[in-house]
Length: 456
Image 1 (cartoon, rainbow, N blue to C red):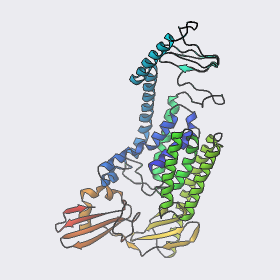
Image 2 (cartoon, one colour):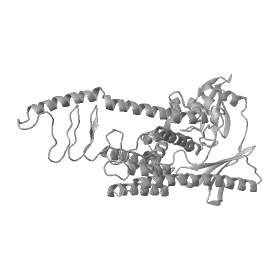
Image 3 (cartoon, rainbow, N blue to C red):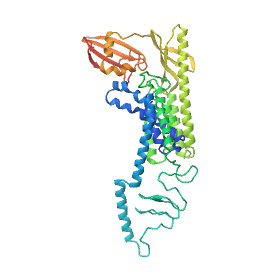
Image 4 (tube, helix red, strand yellow):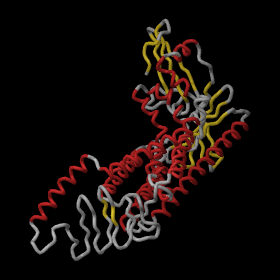
């Protein structure tokens, strides 16, 4: 799935209750949900190199066992560094204290003789003051922290920086203590959510790397799914939109996503209406303030709805494959594999490829209506590459695409000074497509000696 879906899924798990289990849970879940995609740096080399390494080593079973420990260790190290800064201070903070001390000394010099000069007392409202060396609390019992020590007031509020109020107590939101063992378990959940979401689309994932280079496909969700954004994001928006910077950020993101969903022609009009209605409900809850008391149950409900939606779409994929096999078997065609390709924002519609030993069959279907099965073109022959196509497959800029293809089709055209070879993957392009803005095909030009001239 796209990085936004991974991020929102991790954040929703945190808001559903995991952030109450230990400190640093939210950050760990969000980072863990994205960390296997560090291999995206390969895109800075080339698109073909990215296909060669993407969803491989960093997504395989070995990495899935290592990432949680690395992530937990990094989070604990960062927490210790932050604690060190809080206790010892750091240059910017020390400069602030020096300036504040000078201001306090200046104010003491200007106090009337009748007032004590050894400290600044709290005013009649009970507001607490503090100096750079010590902190004293007033009658209100408010707790403050200095660089050296913390003192609590009459209410006995916890004085450690990371201590928090227990659930149900008044005051600040509950912040649990840091529990390394629990944090490691949460890191496993965040990291393992990533291959789950990557497996459900047609792009594929090499789950057994580095032991096997085999690709696995869930064929369940489109790689960019607006319903995943809406379901996984709603609970996070309601819980994380309490400040004006946060509200502004969510408005910008929501506007951009709404524009993407409503402008593209791939999304049907009915889906656009449902999207706008969902955005309207989120805005209404946020505007009326009714979400403050339901953020946790709402996030838990939406996380459950997201998982149910994924299970529903998985069932739809399996039903689609069954319908395709049944319809083709009725015509005397026995297929070896079926790809039920999900379509963006179309929950019940599927296109797909059914592969027999000799032909590919392209089809569409509404999986709730088996009779809607329809072949969208003539059968496409399954043929091994001829010597010219084989020479094109040996091009250095095609190795990633060669290992990633699932339903390859080769077309060779004669040029005045050589050959042009079209290498297509029927997952994402049609058999006669000339150009593709995505990753579904590559074109290799060869000279008369079958030397590579250009790859595009």
